[in-house]
Image 1 (cartoon, rainbow, N blue to C red):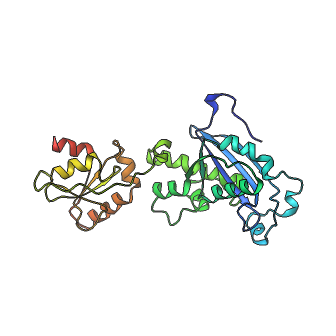
Image 2: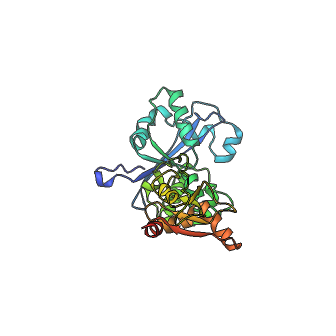
Image 3: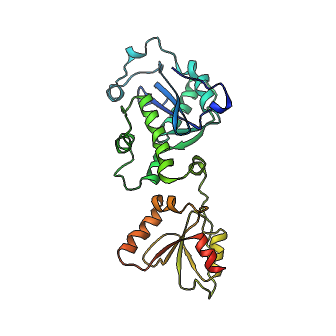
Length: 281
């Protein structure tokens, strides 16, 4: 049963959606669930079986356990479109991979419904950044790692688990929901290093800021050579990102590679943008 927030202060920070399909056509949604989260806790949950208006393939039924007789008399996607749209439209919407986004779009086309304009966040991407050392970032493995109760390929259980992945990632990294939503701007060409300066001879990789930004220009003006990735010649890794030093230390693959090289005996330092600012005065 869904609990629809009635006041502005009851609106979720984000919602999570998961769907199951009847066959290889991604429009064949036979189960859908939406879970809302606010302040690190579950705010509401809703799920329903749907008549997919399509055939059930035996393989799909083996995966999720839903067969044609289970959906007899259930609503179609068109019947619940307004409900789904009301919760997703304009909202931060989490899904574990973009399969669910594609399935919703395909179902909208099939049933002649307006496309749902959500703001999407892939919890697979979140998990890979938060816990890069895990052997894989499948939802079942993440649920076991995080101690989250989970029944795979049940839409409601999958949606809940994906929501907890984001909640725990926020707690683990210190990055806010806004941080996770911020687009990563690809940097342009790095500025050319000055012929001399206090950073002359340093081979520098910048984390958390573009390599053509203000920090990069300051380092290059001091003689530092900006590189795009950590390697055998890197001597300095500078963490920007508004002082989120601990978060980047835990999550960024370039920082982790620098730590490995440091452990192997390479002369390499990891520092912050503020430390560079103080050095350059």
